[in-house]
Image (cartoon, rainbow, N blue to C red; front, side, top):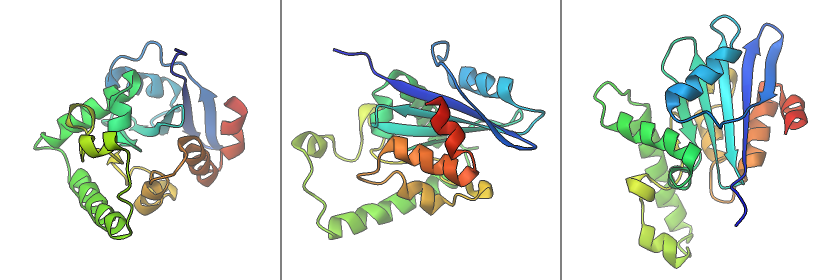
Length: 195
């Protein structure tokens, strides 16, 4: 069995745009490790994004602004929860749901996803694999199937929540989604150069 392939890149915001570099995740065991990796690339307290993709199964965007808690968006929580690096993110997101200090972004996202699910069912998209039926609405460890996290984390950079959710929908290709996000940020060519 071949090893699971991951792609990870750090995008650090600078006065001239975005500085993009591929990064290794070998030393990442916790969200704090990932945040430290991002902060090392930061100029002053400017925003840093970390893109992670696993073999077109899922993608994640992590945003770090100075010493603020990282903001996380995962395209498919259940798929990510089954992988070593993805579970670092999904475990954190599931923990935040039970945290009374967690803001309403997650509740908003869940409501949007419920609406989308209802529309999908109405459109007759219920022909899923038997395994998916058995799995139901929750994946590994009770992590929801589908987008999870803060869908507003790129809104001030020109990528609205609906756009980000659209890049995570059924049939979306994670690598293409990250390319589209980078393109919208003005660093698409640079990202492709480090792939």
